Image (cartoon, rainbow, N blue to C red):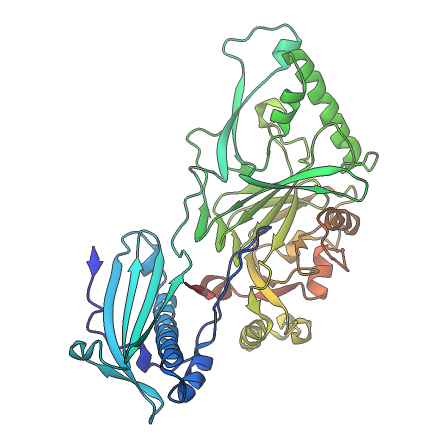
Length: 487
């Protein structure tokens, strides 16, 4: 149903506050965005519009009206996002009329009776609750000349990632040891696990030794909430089993042969973990990488990247997972336990879209404000903030880091990030490994052609060098920007 209660509200063009900076989502696929200009620049242009020819004057007036309207709507959205993204959100649709007064350099409200007259700007602002998109269109005429400008917001409501090209699903696995032993089980033993699955888009990358790897990724707009349940699964933990088991079965014939091949794979994995085999240069199976991209991604379930539970019956957590997960979003929240590895097994990498993110100046201001209430021992060193960099936000719950034969020690103690929030910036404008040993991240960086001048991603290093800047829970909850695309 259309909500008309805004039809009588004052025009946002009468509000002269600044425009919010836009953010756009990106991972491995780069979208070209055109036509984003600051509202203040449009206001400056308006002062000269009366000296321009009618065509350009119309365009300036229409563009400035759109800028001011989307600025006002963004402020309203940020004041109560749940009103637009939550259950029961309703459509909005209102029209208003304004005239730009060159003498006062400001917009003046007009009545509908004057619509269509010279220099009267007609602006229509709608919000489609089902699509989660705000649209602003302004039209103005001067004599026989006219111009129409339209801007459309990014998708702002929750995205469905459980149907169609699903991001994750509950998979059924079947034991094959009985076939090797000649035991007939009816029905055969089965177990179930939730797992992140390969994405519909992929790219093949080749390392410096000529070895090929396949990276797949999921891309969506809006907000992603990842939830599992215990209706069909033995527990609610989400894994990243990928297609390791399916690949083994595809390479073999006969259940007995499949089981023996599986044992070879498991044996190789443990050799690689001990440093006696090269995980990224072998032909037993493919090392896999999965990417997830959205505006905000929130894992509401435990996430275990380190163990692969598709090979051994009873879902035994024993086999390290040869897999890397790249999570790319403006805000990333791990709401429950997170288990990762410090190597290429169960690797976690964070990313922010190229050319986007929270400006370093904004991070600096927020940290300055937070420092006012922090104890002296917890105050953040402002010199660690790169004012010219762009940052994302990440919130960790309890974190476990596996893989090191000598334990995490001080350099990689997960207590340094557990139950804390951070602004994060990437290395070399590409990605940031979390708790990853230097040699491993160097290999991964080489694999994807990332320019990472520093590959030590152990937690102590990330904190000391300012790749992780302590944030507050309020930062994670409140930082939200809205991107508009000009059509």
